[in-house]
Image: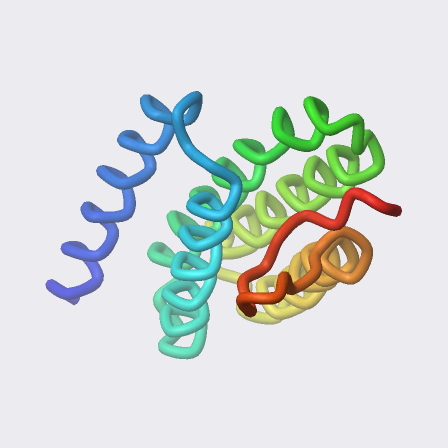
Length: 138
């Protein structure tokens, strides 16, 4: 329980810090934070820690919204739409976790992961160095 509280506090601090520095963050950095937060959420979900799942899902929803201005600046309106849909899907995960409904969390989680994957299929590619980048050719 103590670990969950500490992790929740760290996530809240990270979320606040991210919101303050959002204008300065690069897309790859945001995506790395998204991946780490999702991985942490997976562990909390598997452990049945609904309060932590809620906090992390809300953090994911906020992080995803940070990439929308990048997509808009690159004239990738469909990617911005997908990001907004993904943010809403992670908010659904948070809502289900707040209701302590494990079945609804699993359903919402599957849908949320699909929104991320849908965008990645269209707009993510590896460069020659093996790093991911935005595919603007779509």
